[in-house]
Length: 212
Image 1: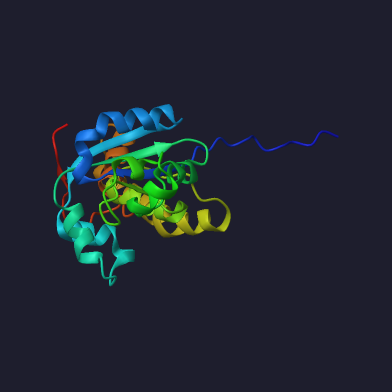
Image 2 (image 1 turned 90 degrees about the vertical axis):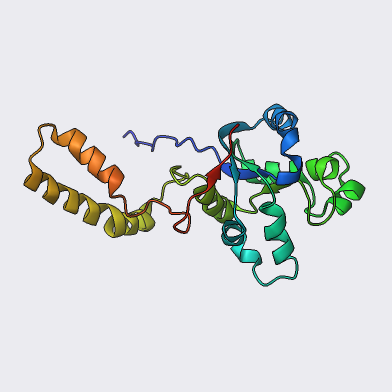
C-alpha cells in the first residue's frame, strides 16, 4: 500500500535590517555586502521616522536609561529599512552584524558590520531582529502590506480564520448581494482590500518616505 507523503513546503526565513541615520551614505556598499553574504533584499524603503514612531518601534526598550537617546538618534534623519531573506536569515544577519555595542564589536569581532560602521554602544550603525517574533513585528511595522511567513497552520490557522477571515468574508458577500455589481469577483476583491480588519496600522500615522 502506498503511503501519500505531504508535499514539501519551501520556507525562506526573513528578517528586518535597518541602516541607521548616521550611515545612510554607506547604503550601496552595505547592500553589496548583504547580497554577497547570500541574502536577497526582498523589499527596501528609505524613510524618516518621528520620535513617536521610534518609541513605538523600540517599545520593548521603553523605560531603559538609553531609551530617550535611542529614539532621538533613530529619528535624527532618514534611515533605510530592508527585508532580508535567506536560510536562517535571522541568525546569519545577527552574526554579520556582530555585538550590539560597536566598541565591543571592534575588539571581539573586528570584521563585523558594527565594528566597521558603528561608533559606540548607541550609534551602532545597523539593526537586526532578535528572533522570529521580533522579525514578524518589525517587518509589519516598516512594511504593513507584507505577509510574513510561515502562515499559521493547525489550531492557530483555525483561530485566525474564525477571528478575521470568516466574519469579513461574510460581510463582504452580504454587501455583494446588496450591490449586485456587474463583475462580482473584481468587486469582492476590491472590497476585501479596502476592508481587511487585520491590515497593520502604524499607530494611526504615516511614515514619511524619503526619495531614493
